[in-house]
Figure 1 (cartoon, rainbow, N blue to C red):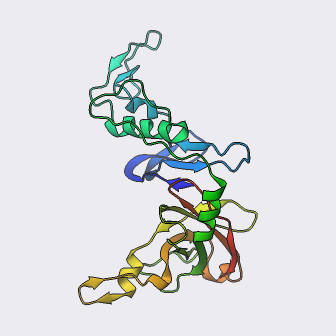
Figure 2: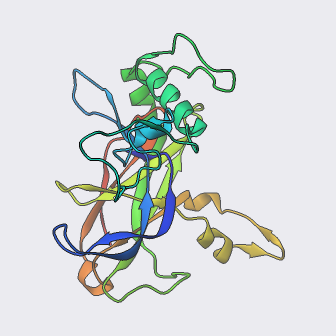
Figure 3: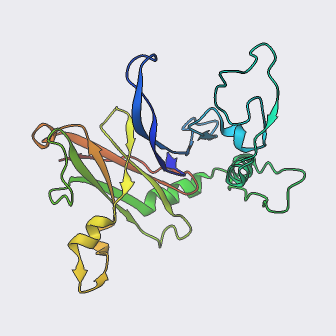
Length: 249
C-alpha cells in the first residue's frame, strides 16, 4: 500500500465513545492505493478516506456547503450550487486513477485538465525484477532526535534499492509488521540523516544506510526486546516486494 497524500487538520470533531459524544481534536487524512494480491485479479484498490470525494467533482449538491442546516426543509431538499467547487485537484486525481486502472479516459476534457497516463499491465517479469532490486531490514532507533512516550518505540526500516536491476521504479511505500499479522505503514525520515551527518553547512546522506523510514510501535523498549519484525517495499507501479525478515530487535 502507498499513501498518495497527507493533510493534517486541527479542530475537528473527535469521537469519544461509540458515536454520541465528541470533543475537539486533530486528524490526518490520507489517500491510499494498493494492488490486490489475488492471483487472478491484481486490481488496484483506491481509498479516498471520505464519503464526500464526489463533492469535489462538480459544484451541484443537495446542500451547498456540506453542513447540516437547522432551517432546511427535510421533506423537500433543494439542489444548490457550491461556490467553492469543483476542486481541480480532485478532478485530475480521478482522471489519473481511472487511467491507471484500465486506461479509462474521458470522452471530453476541460482545457485545464489533462488525460491520465496508463499504468502498465501487471507483469510477472517486472514483479520479479522489483523483488531482485530491493531489500530492507528493521532495527531499533537508539539515537532518537525527539523524545517519545515511555510505552512506545521508534523502529527504523532501512531500504536498499539496486537501480542496476530496476532503473525505472521509485520507492513509494514501506510497511512493517510481525509474522502472520497486519502490516503498518512507515514514513520517510530524513531528519535523522541531517542530524547524524553534518559537515559545516552541507547536509549529506550516507548511502550505506539505505533510504530511512520509521514507524512508532506501541510497545516500550523493554517489551519489544526479542520481538521479530518483517518489512516489505512497494514501488510507484504498485508492485510489492516479498517479505524480508524476520528481524529480531
